[in-house]
Image (cartoon, rainbow, N blue to C red):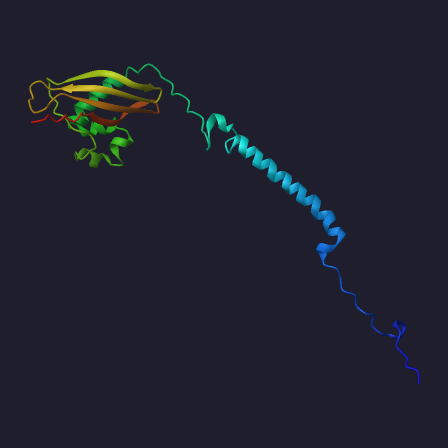
Length: 199
């Protein structure tokens, strides 16, 4: 008796054929090769740019490696305001001499006040190096180190002849200008340590 095999028309399932891996298909390589070429070209361009110009956009033969920054613009120098010297004399007669500290508070900047209230400032614990001042004391302005529209630095020389305990001394005075008024914002002694001599 002859065996009858079912045909597809009779509802039999067709035999499955194994699919080809995607990396062996022509469509994959047609898209992958151009993309890889573009990525390689970009990488080569970036490497060449960094080799010539570096990270700061300047030729390495001129500036070397690293980021360079533009030089700051020079500060504008102006003639010293005539109101500064009388202010410094008043500061010496009050804050430095430890007399009338309420008046000293009114002409002191934030670096001198250091957040203190008037009552705290008047108690005398202030960041100003004291110096014995009396009627014979002299305040001599040695030089103007800096003079800008809103800041200045001077060197002053203090001397009290009849006080043997107080040697003459030079101080740096820093000033700032806020809302049209000058304030003393720094008072630093200029001290040179003595050089020891051999016995």
